[in-house]
Amino acid sequence: MTGQQSDEAMKSNIERAGKLILAGKYVVGITGAGISVESGIRPFRGPGGLWTEHGEPPMDGYQRFLADPKGHWEQRLKRDNTMSEFSQTIEKAQPNPAHHALAELEKLGVLRYLITQNVDNLHRAAGTKKIAEIHGNHRKLRCIQCNSRYDGEEISLETLPPLCPHCGGIIKSDGVSFGEPIPSDTLRICVEETSKCDCMLSVGTSAVVYPAAGFPQQVKGGGGTLIEVDLYETALTPISDVSLRGKAGEIMPQLVNYIKANL
Ligand SMILES: [Zn+2]
Image (cartoon, rainbow, N blue to C red; front, side, top):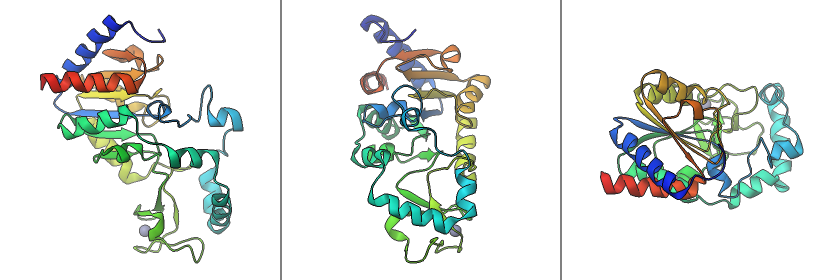
């Protein structure tokens, strides 16, 4: 089923989802591109996707970077002068009510951790603190040797490629490139949080890209519950205990209101 559920069905589904979340001992959220669409960020794949329109980037981006980090940085700095469409939208984007709702669930002590596949920084901008950005954060830089993250202004670009002040390793953008392994520290946190989780709340992810796709399956496999919030049916729908079908920016605040009223 796609499209919006009737008001009555939605109300009863929100109540069911809220009860499962309140019954959860360790609730973890997982989000993907769908949550940021309402902030004006186009997804990469699917209808209206940036890659659908412009073509997929090279699948061996990380190998190309390793082969010539200096050349990659020179190109990147040149490109920054004419910021890509994605960077322009992302710079202007603001968190929407769904991002704020997840940040509020963390403040309430209901949401223990958030795993996101998004690089857009909007969860942090909304105030979420306990977060693993599995594909990195577009605003940050990362040492490929020791995984230290830096804000752009912390790293001198006088000589290229820039080197890590901590260990001397090569610095690249924190966003995980095609062909690049998920940074080991981030992956370890995701695995640890998922193993503790007995109720997962999935928002705006089609859950087809691994490793993120495996986390909800693991929670279900361990006897936990799964709630999904998405405009469309996803690969998670068949294993979800409750599917809330509609805009995350409209559904999530209602879910938080139910939880607050019943805490
Ligand atoms: Zn380093």
